[in-house]
Length: 287
Image (cartoon, rainbow, N blue to C red; front, top):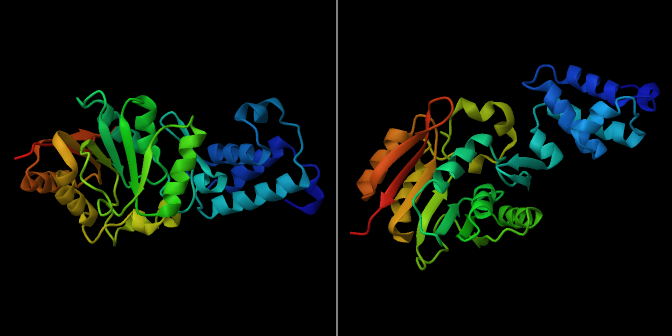
């Protein structure tokens, strides 16, 4: 975009320019619309209703800058500061992972369990608060606690609770269970922990290049944190309580082995839309 064009660029022209800039990406048209709506503070219908409207000089400069960042691979969610998840509109920032649509399967799995009406539930490693807030929005009678070791992540999660109707979640600063007491015990512990192998090629692809590695990787086999969670969670579960874990597509059997060794029963897996086992859950019965 030249200086001469700056005062004349319409919405239609800006969108077409961005699509061309982002054509090497996976979704240039979608990305261009999201970024343009962010800059113009409008919804997508406005882009189609008013294609001849011109951008201000400041709007065009901002749009140029964030489009260039997206062309370099920077995640759209970080650029606009928001991401939709379940029935929520969440703020996101670089202190947390970006909530993925596939993690909604974790929420679905948790909601389908035979839990008490007033269940006590823990979202371990809550990040943006996505899982905890989704559960609280569906089950306001539950007591939900969101745990994270990063204070900035908990502050973000608390803002998201307010932004989505003042949802009631207790936020707890803790590295896994280290700062928790075991009373009252949980009927459900749900977690989407780090599970990527530290040398995985996946870390050099797409959005994950810009996300915090500490929230992604977990040792050479990706199971370092899951081992801790499986070992310690039994101390914080009520008898008959459930542990539900999201994990990598090839980790189910290893996790079932860890759960069985710890004394969990009724181990089972849940497949995603691609047929991969991405959720493993098991029941704890006190000896």
